[in-house]
Length: 149
Image 1 (cartoon, rainbow, N blue to C red):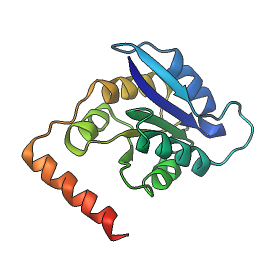
Image 2 (image 1 turned 30 degrees about the horizontal axis):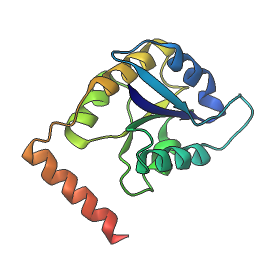
Image 3 (image 1 turned 60 degrees about the horizontal axis):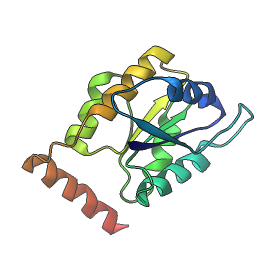
Image 4 (image 1 turned 45 degrees about the vertical axis):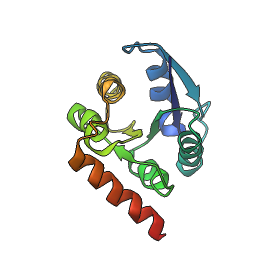
C-alpha cells in the first residue's frame, strides 16, 4: 500500500477532500496533513509539514494544494531533497516524476477543476523515475545545488 501525504491551505481544502475520495491504481493510504476546514490558513505551514513528511520518508510522495499552486511550490522547494512542481497538465505530472524524480505534485485549486485534478494525481502516482543516466546526472547536479546553501 502506498502512503501518500496530502495537504492544503484553506483555498485547497475542498479539492483535498475530493481527491481523497477518488480511486487510483493500487491501494493508497492517505496521510492528511491539513487543513481540516476552510478557515483562513497559511500555505507555508502546510508546505513545511509536507516537506518534513517526505524528507523523513513517512510517505514516498505528496500532493500539496493552495489557490494557485505557486506559493506552496515555492515554499516546499526551500527544503533540501524536495522536488515539488505545480502541474496543470497530465504530461507534466508524469514527466516530472519520470525525468526529475518529482516527489510533490502541487495543484492550484483555483486553476484546475476537480476532474482534471483527479487526472493529474493519477498521472503523478502511476509514474516512476526512469533512472536513465542522463536524468540521474541532472538529479545529481540539482542535489549539488542544495549543498551550496
